[in-house]
Length: 263
Ligand SMILES: Cc1cc2nc3c(=O)[nH]c(=O)nc-3n(C[C@H](O)[C@H](O)[C@H](O)COP(=O)(O)O)c2cc1C
Ligand SMILES: Nc1ncnc2c1ncn2[C@@H]1O[C@H](COP(=O)(O)OP(=O)(O)O)[C@@H](O)[C@H]1O
Image (tube, rainbow, N blue to C red; front, side, top):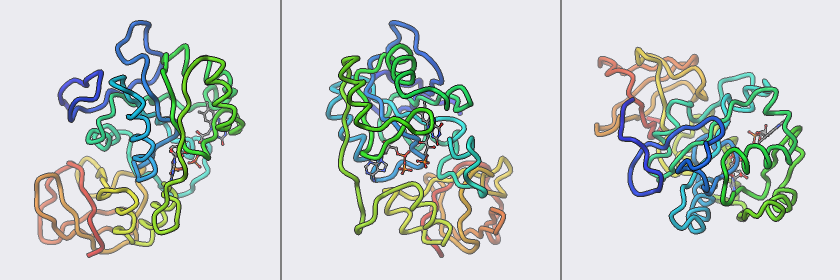
């Protein structure tokens, strides 16, 4: 996809830049306010965290961490396709939110083995030169999830960076979470999933447009209402293995779709 170069500060609808490792000294993206987590989908909880981060950023770059592969894939903790966002669509998903860059480190054995202290020292401080980080109250990090927000705050004080957080964001009494959204999609409750996402679910198809991307969570098979950017909604049929059909129409190609409702 060739789109305008990313801006070092949030000032318009630019695709965020994806970086997977250390930023060289003097790089314009150093000194960012970084949101910590996986951010599969960018749901209401993630959006609230971003608002808090942006208030603090005061013109500094704002970045989102998103490991690849997803840690759940790395640990094999999911037997079914589960992702809400493919790696390829994440920059597009985050564009309306004015994110400057996506920090997408490779989640491999070495990365997963980093202690919380080494993650902070080597990755956040030395590698990215972060100004501040934000994470939800339940955020865990480092080998065997041994680091929590109390440790992150202590490490922030030691290194001189700020650590922001917020109370859990809920909708109708339930915590907004990627897991809850996956569950709604699997039962076909796309509208409920979309309310938690704060926007229609953005899906990528296979290159020939006839199936959902193999990483994506599978909606309950059936008929849905969907649209591509700038076009009117049309009915689509989704099969049990993610087959994607437009009854009576030619598949218009691999451009992403927004799933609007069960239809
Ligand atoms: C540097 C680093 C190392 C991590 N190591 C582990 C680990 O060894 N085991 C683990 O379950 N999660 C680890 N995590 C946490 C995962 O990124 C992820 O949050 C966790 O698997 C839970 O994912 P979930 O929120 O989708 O359930 C690590 C995170 C970071 C940043
Ligand atoms: N409902 C929520 N309210 C507040 N913070 C949240 C919420 N959901 C996620 N977060 C925070 O957003 C960051 C990314 O969350 P992540 O673990 O990737 O998503 P999820 O918890 O939805 O699976 C983490 O710091 C997490 O604590």
